[in-house]
Amino acid sequence: MRPESSKNEPFKGAVQAKSNAAHGLRDLFEVGLKDIYWAEKVLTKTLPKMVKNASSPELVNSLKNQLSETQEHVSRLEKIFEVTGIAPTAKKCDAMQGILKETNGLIRETDIGMVRDAGLIAADQKVKHYEIATYGTLHAFAKTLGENKAAELLAMNLNEEKKTDAALTGIALSAVNRQAFKADAITNT
Image 1 (cartoon, rainbow, N blue to C red):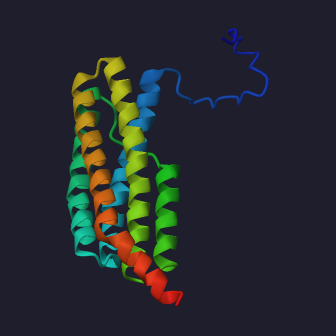
Image 2: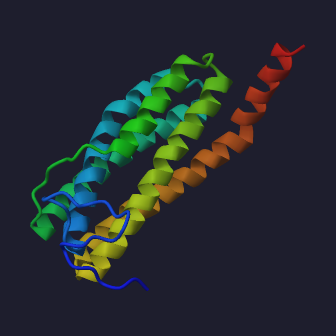
């Protein structure tokens, strides 16, 4: 275990925190909430574009369901802000912005059809995995902080994200990946 350092003597190689840095778990919880709030709000604008670029009926249906689910996640987050007394503001999420930039690039770099669908599933699962990690962490923070109603709402979002991720895997394995592979075989013959 590292010895405590004074505020004037940071550990060698440690990055000096900004003046508005999180000082406790509650601050970290607040930063995380604002981050995922931004991410979910941006997803409500991104999912329709993904729907327009998907061709598999199962994937289109999944993405449409995710849009209504994401809108519900935004509503739950707003309820969490309300019950915790945290201002409901969105803070740009660099991770989600990067994943969505990659998704847009993938759309431009794939032929429409099953190959693009396979790419959209992969991109969407990156989104889901980020959300699962974030909601899992925020749930643990809320429980530690005694924010039981927030923890309950976060657990709901977390469980829905896990179910969606599993459904996406099912869509990929049931048909999309095989059909994308067949497109590979046709292209390479």
